[in-house]
Structures are given as structure tokens and as C-alpha cells.
Image (cartoon, rainbow, N blue to C red):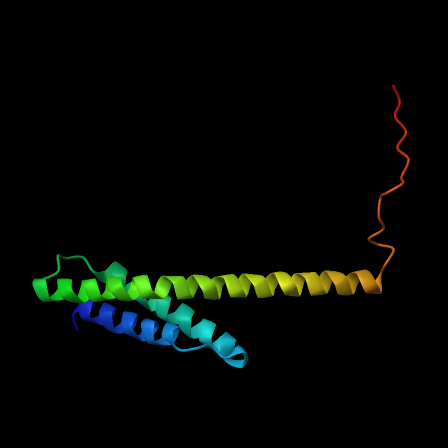
Length: 116
């Protein structure tokens, strides 16, 4: 199979996956599928070593168009993942503060002696 046609097919699968709404219960499988398709797409991209024909240039334009439509959605998904990770870290830290309240003692009011 032609590398550019295969690149188009993988990009189309990725585009279809990104277009589907993400259900929070299936988010892990969604991310795994996303990563697998991106890796496969990278492998196919590295396999292309020749100039495309006119018909293949049209496919490449369609791939570029799909990429432009996917980027904002992928960025928003990345931000949602980062936000969830930060919330999880905050919850974990708060839980540790409740378990051991004297470990995170404030330093306010501490007297620091200075020898000059």
C-alpha cells in the first residue's frame, strides 16, 4: 500500500476518534487509542521518503485540513488531563494534611536569631 494513502487512513481514524465525544468512564481507553494512532501515524510519516504525485498532494492537503481541525480539540483534551492531574495532586496533599496536621506546620511567628 502507498505510504501516503496509509497516512491518510490513519489520520482519518485519528480524526474520527477526536470528533467523538469522550465519556468520562471510557477516558483511559480513549487516551490509549489516541496515543496508539499518533504513534502509528508517526511511523508512517517517517516511512515517506519520496515526492508525492498530484493525487497524493490532494490527500496531503486533506490531511493538513484534518490536522488543523484536530489541534484545538486535542489541546483542550490535554488541558483537561492536566487539570485532572492537578486536582488529584491537591486532593492527595489535602488528605495528607488531615492525616498528619503537624507535618505541614506554618512557619509564621518563628524567631530567627541573627548573629552579626
